[in-house]
Image 1 (tube, helix red, strand yellow):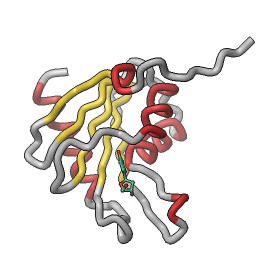
Image 2 (cartoon, helix red, strand yellow):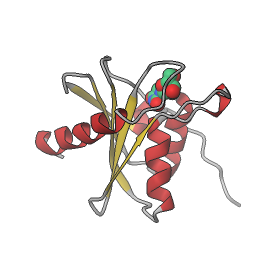
Image 3 (cartoon, protein in one colour):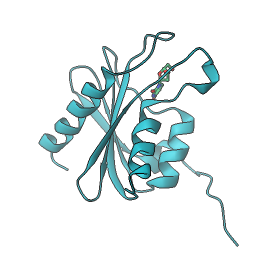
Image 4 (cartoon, helix red, strand yellow):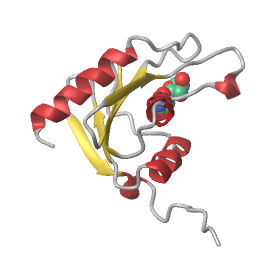
Length: 132
Ligand code: THU
């Protein structure tokens, strides 16, 4: 991916963050996941009064893609409005690794500076269920 493609994905993540429902944390997150066929699915965090049921932006984007039949991914951009780089939480790392083991994770700040890590770097020695 070149810088222009990365910035486009970051733009989509930032736009998605505007839909965040974050009355409890006031922390607005957006994500945009790029599938191998070029389609992009976005997500934002959604909070509700049962706090254990909060869902992160990354998971919304991933589940939207999976539920539309997209199963192969190259990159995800994550942006938290007005904040520095937003690394994915531990649960999202596990899910992203499981469904997209080759994923590049693009973490952007509000000025569109970014840092990129492979999901396997963010989740060393990841658990993977061994089917018999
Ligand atoms: N959040 C995300 O959406 N993605 C992350 O990578 C970190 C945290 C959300 C969950 C919750 O709505 C808020 O940010 C504060 O934790």
